[in-house]
Length: 230
Image 1 (cartoon, rainbow, N blue to C red):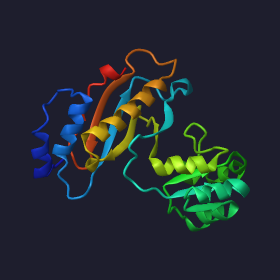
Image 2 (tube, helix red, strand yellow):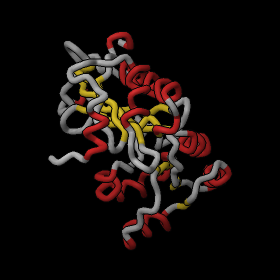
Image 3 (cartoon, helix red, strand yellow):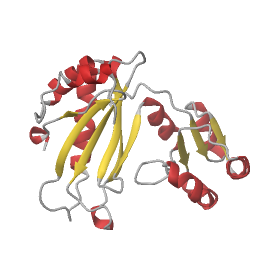
Image 4 (cartoon, rainbow, N blue to C red):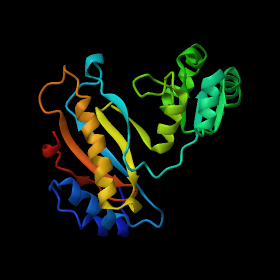
């Protein structure tokens, strides 16, 4: 795959095969991000589990201490007091079957996070086939199916991120923007990795975190040493 000159120049700053301490890695992120826009920084964790087995699934959510730097549009399925609480917390869209119909009939997806109260899931369940593949289906494990819609909206707006295994047993998760600086990125990184470690399934055997890489949107990957965090 062809790599541009900026990428190649950035890659020269990284010692091949080296594993950097988190603080060093975040400093390098700032030096290797060459794009004209504020790049997102993402963590990639390869875990020593087999996600095909239910007892080895790793999934959860955490509010990053410094947020994500991204403004999110929140859709909430709720009624009555919970609907009012969601609106007061800043949800862009709040409704019931009207929103279910809009998504199904108009192929409407102008939102980034979906939250639902438990009593709404009998309606929201119909959207599984369209929300599921986009990673938008509400789930109790990620805290997006909750009796406290207002709190869930507040957390989503504050920088709550969901982490989950993909089919290759890797977690991909954003931890902020390059403009955050090394210190805030490291705080977010430590919070995310700490949450993933706490979520270790009892059925997992051997080395839990096999590898960890961080990278900005257009930058090269930087290997991180997570031994001290385990």
